[in-house]
Structure formats: C-alpha cells, structure tokens
Amino acid sequence: MRAYRGQPRIFTAAHMAGRMAELEVKGLCLEFGGIHALKSVDLSVHTGELVAVIGPNGAGKTSLLNCITGFYKATSGDIVFNSESILRRHTHELTRLGIGRTFQNIELFPGMTVLQNMLLARHTRSSYGFGPACLYSPAVKREEIRHHEILEEIVDFLEMQSIRKELVGSLPYGLRKRVELGRALALEPQLLVLDEPFAGMTLEEKEDMVRFLLELHDGWSQTMILVEHDMSIVMSISSRVIVLNFGEKLAEGSPEAIQDDPEVVRAYLGDTSDPESTL
Image (cartoon, rainbow, N blue to C red; front, top):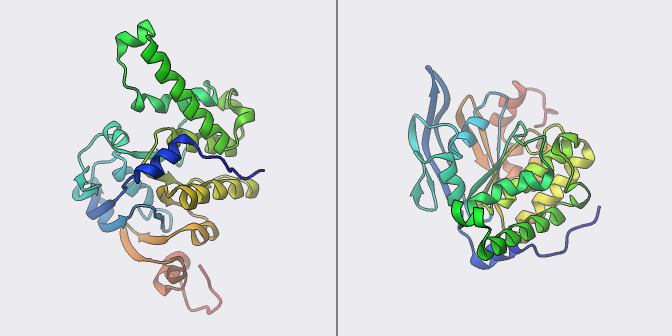
C-alpha cells in the first residue's frame, strides 16, 4: 500500500491551531459492588504524546478508558482534561470537548456504508438546527459539502477509497477496525482514545494500522492513549508506557525501562527466576 502524502484539512487545521490535549487522572477509584476495578490510579498524557496502557487481563485497562470517556463514573478521584474536571461529564459532552474513541468490540452500524458510519460522527460539528436542515438552506448545503470533503480526506488517509460505499457488515474484521478509526477521526479529536486497535488483526492489517497511527502521531502530533496487548507494537510506537495490575498502577516509564522492569515481567509471567524470560 502507498504511504499517505497529502495534508487532510482536519489535521492541517489541528496542527495550525496547536490544539492542547492535556489529560490528568488523579487518584481514580472505580468499584463494582465491592470489587475494586481501579485503585487510586494516577497518570497523565501530554499534548503530542502516544501513551500506552498495558497489563494482564483484568488489570483495569478498559475500565480506565471507560472512565476517561464517560462510559463509567468513577467512585472517587478526578479526571482533568485541558484544566477542566470532566469526572461528571456525559459522554456526548466529552466528545464535544475533543475526546474521540474507538472500541475493543467494534461499535459500527453494519447495515450502513462506510461513509454513512463516518458521517454520523460529524453531527458534533454541525451548527444548524432542525428547521434549516428541513429547508436545506444554502448555509446547510455549504456545511454538508464541507463535512463530506473532510470525510473524503479521512477516507484517502486511511486508504479506504475502494470500500467507501460498501456496507460495513460486508467488510472483513480488519477493515471494520479501520472504519472505526476513521469515524473517531471524523470527530476531529484533541485526544484520541484507542481500546485494543490491533485486536483480531492479521499481520498485514497490523502493519497498516501501525503506519496510520505513526503518521498521525509523528506527522500531525495527534495525542493518543491506547490499550493494547501486542507488546511488540506497544514497545515500538509508544512515547511512554503505563502498566496496570489488579487495578493499580504498577509501573510507568519509557518502553525500554518497562521492558526491563522485573515487577512488570513478574506481573505478566508470574515468575522471573528464568533469566531468559522476557516481556
């Protein structure tokens, strides 16, 4: 596949505006009927970073993302985004504030086309109301044209030209993951939250997704936080890695430091007595 060399309007505009995306999680706790999913978790994501959150199954990774994106309400602690507490904000409010997300289990409409699924995300950027929409005024028409232009730029960036009018339900799993990324980008997010974006993909599909995320990060300074189990990918693309275990933060640091941390190795493997054991 070719490498993208264009300048999508949304990314160019974002770069020129110097969008801030500062996230700080402070002492976050989450309980479900006495079960502690998160225990006093502290972390931060700074503008332009690609931060990975890793940990064994049940460590609380998706619960953390659900709190950040408003799907779960934390028991205590605080979440601050761009100097504003968002702990009690609803999901749609967080979307308007600039937090976009993809899901571990794909949340698309299979009976709609790729473009239609992506267009749904643009409602957060629409300025007109019900009346002008019904009348399809010239202002509405101009705005609709702009929405479609932006979607076509995202389609081009993610190399989905050949499937843009295909029903999502007819697409293979890896392409559906790509469509979900496209829908998240259609929100023009300041912070992009990715929950296992590589899960279930073939090697070739993973390579394509890595390329897209690296171009978003390196070329356009898109701020991202991702949960992922594929350690080879995490260690190769992340600016910083945060490790959770049983709902608590176990370690934080550069990919190299995390890879050599005996506590992290023990959490994954259960035993560090074998000198040849690696993460």
